[in-house]
Image (cartoon, rainbow, N blue to C red; front, side, top):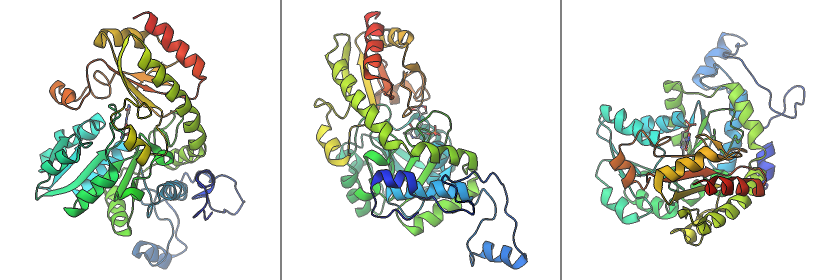
Length: 393
Ligand code: LCS
């Protein structure tokens, strides 16, 4: 259905949906690896691009395409490229835009493996990288080299909840002929649209808010232009990190309630963040909706809300954090985020444990930092849960 000009919730439900021969209300799962040609000419025309249609699921598939069209519409991009995971999306972007001798600048506290794969693998193919505090434009400017091709931001970042000014970064990047990529996983298209702020490419781990039900892993890339779309799709097809039709079906089902889920969880997150900030056993809280957040004004300017992710440091460091995590009963002690269920985890020993300690601390990921992904349970139950666990610290 055409949803241009329609509201966000209408797009969530209808963007990418197409009429099939039975009038299905939801896009069916086309669980087929290959598609028969009518005749030899039809096959040749599909391969040459003279005719549009489906050939082979790694290249394209009706269920996957419906999801790609849906998210592309939500992000106001040219088209979507769905991938097997968020890391599949990240590696497709790296492989597409970086060659031997090229350089990338990225947020220091970017998701651990997005940095790890660059420093441990892409570096073996001659790709250079710098990790800086991208919330400070001067440090980005100082890191630019003649061979810088990519500025890869994560905002808000995982797990430091630090924001980078997408508009300013886009202006700086474009002045130097650098492509700006934004990992929008922590916001989702409901709260932030990087392409509208000047970014060239946006990507997501759809494992998180977009799917929202902790039952699949997936990723998506949405570029602004056809030129980038064609290059990225070709790269993804060559890399072979396509999404599966069943995965796409699950995400299409999950995305419909994106706005409802975030609205509900965000209200609770605001309450919890304020409550934690006053708690005597908590050293500090990072949440963009708190006036104490260093980029509270940027959050109000750049995002349409503050999200559901909270980071906080316990007084008593990791020992205190461990006691807290071992005693929560409603929140699950698990990695991942952005689902209907509340999750709590310890980045230094879990999601970011692959980073050497020095780099981890430079990125602001302290030993006692606890990350909390607020779900849609009753706020009262979540606060009581934290209260009884904090009492044991
Ligand atoms: N980008 C961000 C911001 C992420 O948080 C993650 C995963 C990825 C990309 C990679 O996506 P995946 O391949 O897992 O779909 N973040 C995780 C986390 O914080 N805990 O577990 C996974």
